[in-house]
Amino acid sequence: MLSILTACIAVMLFTSACMTTRIEETKDRSTGILPDESVVILASNYHAGNAAEEDFVECIVDKVQSGRHKLKVHSASEFRDALFPWLEPRTAPQGVDGLPELLKRPGISDRIDARDIRYIIWIEGNTARTSGGGSLSCAAAPTGAACFGLTWWENLSAYEATVWDLDDGIRTGTVSTSVNGTSVIPALIIPVPFIARTQAAACKGLSRQLKTFLTSSTPAR
Image 1 (cartoon, rainbow, N blue to C red):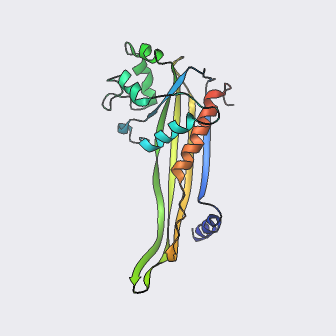
Image 2: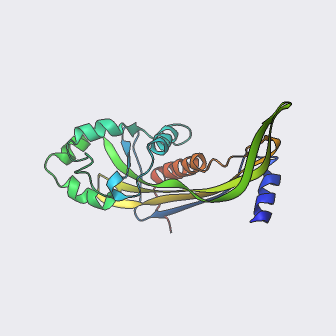
Image 3: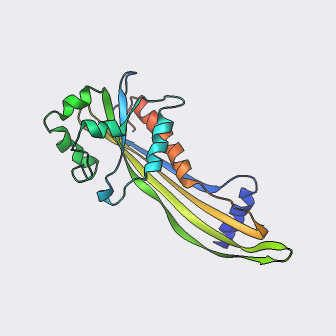
């Protein structure tokens, strides 16, 4: 681990983080979306035990509706209101596999069709600290304060987006991302933090791949 930290510190003298990113896609069906069609992006139900953080979902929404191949995103809160009470915490599906049963309920398909929503994107995952160590101490003196030592930690941001085609009533595939990053704070009088922003990197990678997934019609081989 010491050698890894040493390498990270050397790299972070020139960059802002030491991170590794992995993105995977499984595409079972052809996709495509018309200019007037939209997607709705939902976080997994908190009862499922692996609910995506609200700020991460908001980041995905912002990025998929901007830049190249941008998508039209329907408001998740308006979508929940339109399907009330079936997306309330106590009645919502525990995962994407519960969507077929939801779509069979009377009037649900009509409410979705009226809003030109083509896909539901169901986000699961979280960011968690996986390890850490080191020691950092600070003290005040008549000449000023000083800090000495080194502390580090690793975060893993792992998320999966499941895409459901509402026109055909089928699951079209998944896109997942995993970003592992080591943050280091060395201090020789003044602490100098090098923070690996794994969640931001996961959002960027997942949103970019989602846009490609939906706008490219060919299934993955």
